[in-house]
Amino acid sequence: MTYYTTRIESPCGPLQCTVDETGAVVSVEFLDEDIGPRFVARAIEECHEVLESPLRTDDVRAQLDEYFRGERLEFHLPVDPQGSPFQREVWSELRKIPYGETRTYGEIAAAIGHLRAERAVGAANGANPIPIIIPCHRVIGADGSLTGFGGGIAAKKLLLMLEARHRPNPVRGQLRLDF
Image (cartoon, rainbow, N blue to C red; front, side):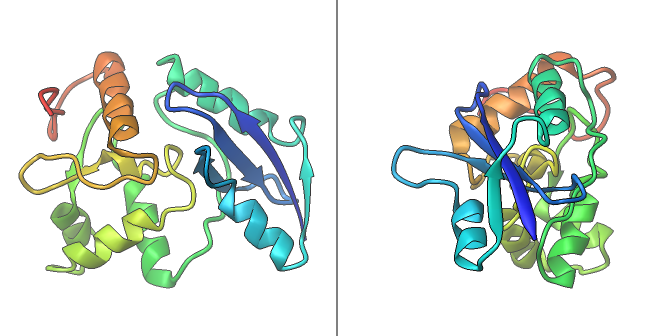
């Protein structure tokens, strides 16, 4: 398997975006100074070829840029997150959360038919390999508080505030902007 990757700049800091041979997004990682892209390191360790390719990742880059400018409310990209069947079920449900809205871990658990599985949903949410595109940042605590996020709480807050500014029709699950 060959993967194609590129680094892009975002308001949340640098992101490493990786697609597979079919063009499906397999990873979006928040980069920090101390840790490089974990997906790329793991793929190389497993003897996969990883090539820097802005051309192969152009669609994901363009759609993320539009999202950060407030011009894109949903992503139209093939995704192939690797995880357990339960994780994939959670991630599929996350993609149903409308732009500018939030859900609690309990609401996600109920939506997939696993009442009282909030902690398991939280763990699956935290393992999401394609944040932003699979919008795990839209999941909040039962009390409305911001909880863990792979890119950090500041990035989660930034993403939620961006969506609150560009939200077309505020309905349920409105964002509290006083966090």
